[in-house]
Length: 318
Image (cartoon, rainbow, N blue to C red; front, side, top):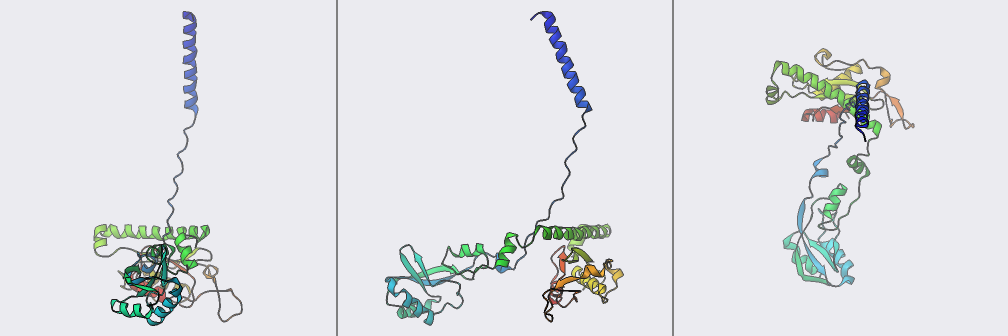
């Protein structure tokens, strides 16, 4: 390539780079992706019996020498030494090629239990063995119990649906999230008001941690009332109790001055109506406005775990 050809190639290359730069300047910068709101995670709150580790207790077991006596052994032991507190356990298990049977729970009954089921039983094999103390309530507990001894288990479909998250549909979850955002937003606003007067640390140390409760019509997701902790006005006015009193006000009752609470939302009568079965009618679904203490089908959303008296009040209002 001659010198002139090389110069021409360099010039063309510079022109190409310049046009690329100009094109870049004319292009609009891409917009940043929209920030999505973090979805609230639904975590079931179940009694301790559903979530605690499998507790164990000791029993005495022995090997069966002759399998043809298994039925008579089990029958004798069940009559004389029933496992009253361990009804969830099967009496016999297969351990390899050997059958093993639970004799009894107490050491002082081992000799008598062995004597009543003596034919076909290897009394020299009597020993202690750990088994589950309680009947399993969940599939996870059942699988853990099986590691110790064969266990009977009848899975409750409602419990299963609560644990695996299939109890609520996508629409239900969306409604819950919308209502909880109302609760959390109100709690945030109230906390800002409180911390303007007191430091956050003082609020926590003095127990003035705000809770907010919303009562919702599950039929349409309408928030009927939002109760805010007003224990500064009266020690009984926790958020849940304030919200329930606001619902009573909607229905023409109420015991407190609503000006001291958050106040009643302007809710149409139609939005207060839910569908619930009426035991006095032949129809299955009767549209009615529920009385707060008689079969009300409203949902309650709490920003924090309610106090004991509020929880008791909720139970009474079911």
